[in-house]
Image (cartoon, rainbow, N blue to C red; front, top):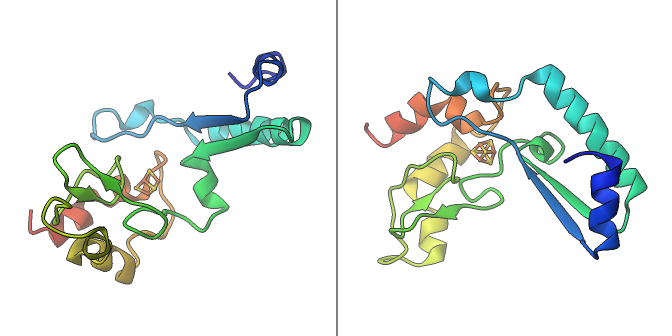
Length: 147
Ligand code: SF4
């Protein structure tokens, strides 16, 4: 998946964008399945080489690129997620919602109490393990919703 041969073959077929999505745990039991720091470093180094060797392709690494983009970009800081029921969630990996776009505008969803609290209380920042800051702080997120 990160090999020069594989990416070259994609390039020869006209591929212009490659997106890598890390496994992000959403339960305590699956936390050890997330890649650790040594693997993340190797991944990042290989990706850096590919970016240099293949300027014709845009490489996106999620959530790996968050380190260079100032941390978690969920909850309207960069994007948010709408689930299949219309609930506006901080991120697909943080499935909590206090507003529904079936009954509110996207602008209202962007300033929902949950999103505002996540941004103003600095919950989106800070170090984390397992690839996702909101998973790491899910107790705080649930507390904001009164769970
Ligand atoms: S909630 Fe987790 S996976 Fe989603 S943007 Fe934030 S850190 Fe990344």
